[in-house]
Length: 83
Image 1 (cartoon, rainbow, N blue to C red):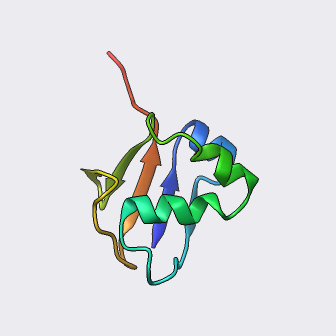
Image 2 (tube, rainbow, N blue to C red):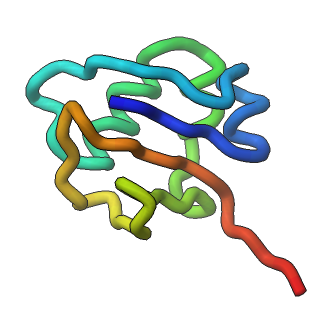
């Protein structure tokens, strides 16, 4: 699974992207985030509050209950505004 981190999530995790193999029981975005929190202090800080975090799975906006699989691309980012 390919993970992409943007803005302050990238700063806190120290990575722009990574390829991971979560345990088989990680089947949703919420499960992925919970697993990521346990990977170290930067991840725990990045995902301490999920309210401002947006997610896209395979370049489509997704929710925390969206199913994910090993071949998916998951992007995690704060809300984006612009003009």
